[in-house]
Length: 397
Ligand code: T4K
Image (cartoon, rainbow, N blue to C red; front, side):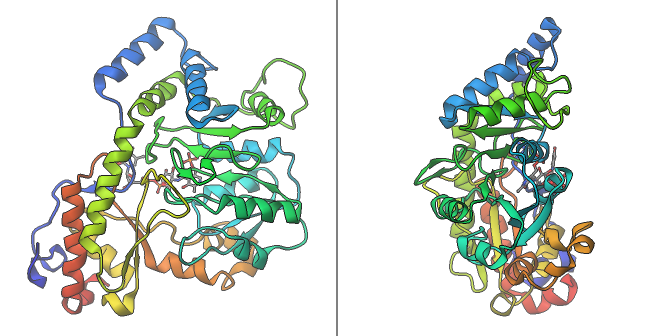
């Protein structure tokens, strides 16, 4: 624990962590497991195009999530795009601006116009109230994002979508393994899209999965995901290459076997953060919302400058100097990013909660490279920075 301001690295003290700690899960199977899988792929000389490991992964995902169709794809961005095409959406789609830019990029690629809505200040999720404030003529779909290892209120949003007669599907990029009172994420709305990027709790290095209970939609998406389709006559608007490779599937299959251990590890790290910062003025560690079981994908810290003594940006600089690679997701909000700021200027200064969260929220390291001990030490840095805020603030910008 640093007991004086000059012990902080930003004021010339030695760094707390000599090996930098990133956010992002970055779990990878043991080398022996990976080697064995790769040997099989090479011996079969079958590397991609719906090979046996992709088929095995899809069956395992359907079983694990209790969903009729799990269609793997090369990443979640293209997964969202395929859902939008597969549903035949036209006009406008509503989504939060407080998300990763991919949520909106996919919609624009699918030829849709975006209506941005705000999020709830407490959960950071879209709610019927935030959707009500944004809904406008031409909205044909809503894509809430199940953020941070938490969930939206699925039942309330389902009612909202039914009342407004719009299609509902979820960006569940962060949500693999999350359980809600209504069941596991993966079965809700017309579809849900998970990301299996390396920074997610279930990794395929790159990858994703579209889950849906709608067999017709799944069949259209399977057809669209490969350039030649599935070689059966089936009307789809376009085909692309969105296939997952065998190597990616092998990593995800191993990850499914280890999912319980990964989540237990994340949870222990999260608990260590909670113990370290609990009761600290101006600091809130966001608890996963609307879940009965979280994957603890993210450790999200919200900083209230007046009470804490320094801004989120200053604390972020203090931590980075210590080797803690905290990230300011999502800064800026999508509505302030290229090309959306120019395309939709009507949202500037009209999404107050989003703007506030973009200025006050950051993610602390969690995942395979972080131990509970590390989390305790990072928490102590946050406590110490509060105690020495006056001295640190001038150097932290
Ligand atoms: N919807 C939502 C709500 C999302 O958050 C995302 C993606 C998507 C949709 C789209 O999913 P994908 O199409 O990606 O499947 C990262 C991830 O690339 C992205 O998947 C994720 N969300 C987003 C929130 O974070 P970047 O550009 O910030 O990643 P990057 O490269 O800066 O990495 C983050 C940290 O992890 C850095 O400190 C470096 C470290 N890292 C990363 C990788 C990949 C490593 O140490 N090793 C690695 O291999 O977007």
